[in-house]
Image 1 (cartoon, rainbow, N blue to C red):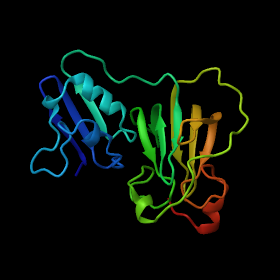
Image 2 (cartoon, one colour; image 1 turned 120 degrees about the vertical axis):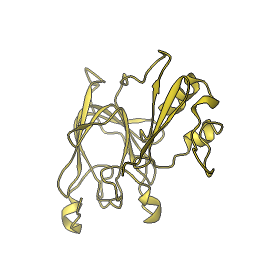
Image 3 (cartoon, helix red, strand yellow; image 1 turned 60 degrees about the horizontal axis):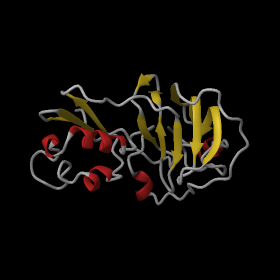
Length: 211
């Protein structure tokens, strides 16, 4: 059974994919009149805000769990001008780009597991809280040249029992937004054991990681 549900309003429909949600709570805190947690019946009410307000809150959802479709001809979400990957403190890798993940087009936003414990790999499912995963979101800057192009498609591949291979124009940022590297290909740890987080250092082999 799919975890994706769609709630139709007059001017806009909101879709919610529970399998991608990391409970960042941007939606229930930003538009509590639309996203009403812990209620009986439908918990998303698109007609309780303007389509522009919903447009903004969807963009604030790091995991891509919230998407929308307008019925009034307004703005739709577009590809970012700069592709970014933010390393979240003690948590996931939040990527914003025109994404293809494991061979499938997957929108513009996703949060990817880096603790190794997610039951929905390669996506984060919040398991880093349960396993008390600890990993800084602040890393030293790596010397890198500015990219000629900063947008375009980004491909994410879960290598068998190994890291996430990410290819495409990408700025890797710490949790507070500082750019730590500009790259077109990188390998990110998804076993949780690397001594060079967020990058892979081969530790998945030592611990027998199964991905």
